[in-house]
Length: 345
Ligand code: 1CP
Image (tube, protein in one colour):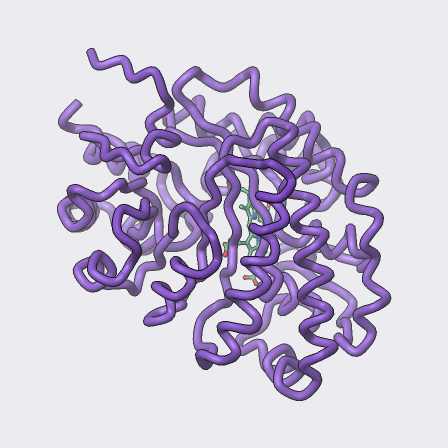
């Protein structure tokens, strides 16, 4: 047995290549687990659930107990930050998040002073999870990136093409950037709090980064992400930060070079051979199995696992999906995935 003194997930983020890649799955706490559904039923609604440290800590730990993933991700949601900014957020069962649509011209109304008061239960979740984790398991905190959070705030929920957000970004740039800056500043406070509460890695989800022209990508993705990371580093937080600009395509390398992230999470669409050439040398990568492959299972699953591991050999690599796990994935497929990744051990 090879007892590494460091958690494999954290060692990989420092740039060390492991013989077996560490693995966790985006949205690994969720409806595909019966034990999750049981706990979820105890909360009146999804927001209450996120703000109940007992319940949130329990569902954070469930996938670790069941599968022994290399990292736990705190149970919360990217849409808690709008609440801290003074916006109303609620979830409609079976549909998704709803917010009162916000016009960026009113960006000065966004409250910068309520982060701690509103989001302290999330710190409590982290403090409860930390001592319960196995020695080799790392704890991840996270937030949404300003652009992605702004799309929900402006559209009033999820949307197909983020049209109102894109139009506002071009037509009222000063106010729009003011809104992103406020989201960034509260997000930085939030991440600093998470690190103080025990998060060993932070992840920024920019789920709706796709399809933006380069000048807009630079303004609304790179600049606010860097603003967050600069503030987190200025506060003395040294933990690794993973960036996930989903769908960034050819702009991934600029994001990787210019934001200050430690590691990059890739989506399903990227070509590893090209990425290996254009990403900063040695930057750890995470990803990027198609969630539909996990649903399909069988030989296809084994083949795709093997392909990704071979494609990233020699690189610090963390195995993950290219987006979140879906609610109907059979638990047996997750077990098969882990067995395939860890077969050489
Ligand atoms: O294990 C985990 O990862 C759980 C923690 C977690 C995380 C990291 C949840 C719980 N949400 C998130 C991030 C998150 N939330 C993202 C970024 C990652 C991604 O792209 O998937 C986004 C976009 C959201 C917003 C959100 N929250 C949606 C998507 C709506 C849309 O526009 O498509 C939904 C459906 C939610 C609710 C939610 N959040 C988390 C869970 C388990 C759920 C489902 C609620 C339930 O049925 O119990």
